[in-house]
Image 1 (cartoon, one colour):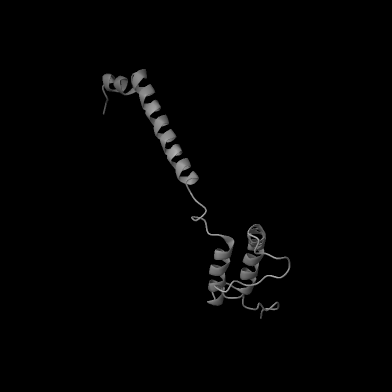
Image 2 (cartoon, rainbow, N blue to C red):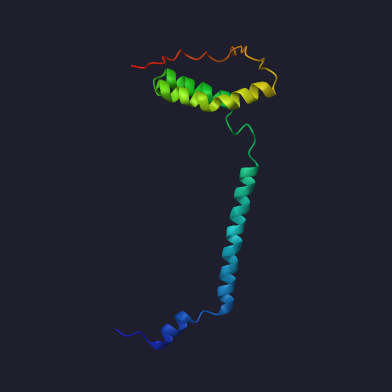
Length: 116
């Protein structure tokens, strides 16, 4: 099977203006997508992101239901502790070493330091 020479030459001879136009369209599309993503990310509010106390409450429920081991729950509490302390000191609700539990949240279950 032979391909006519004119067909090969037409396939390779795309005008430079068409190449430039296609490249420009691609660059504009990528730039538009990037702008949309940045605006979406920048438009997030603090309400979109769960705060540390809400996360700890959810993990506490999962732990109570048996979804997390004691060591996993302890690790999560350890990682969230700095954020919780920063929030309580920033809003003035933290008063030194005495921390009163919030009445709308259950208290942490006791954790056995030597799990079976």
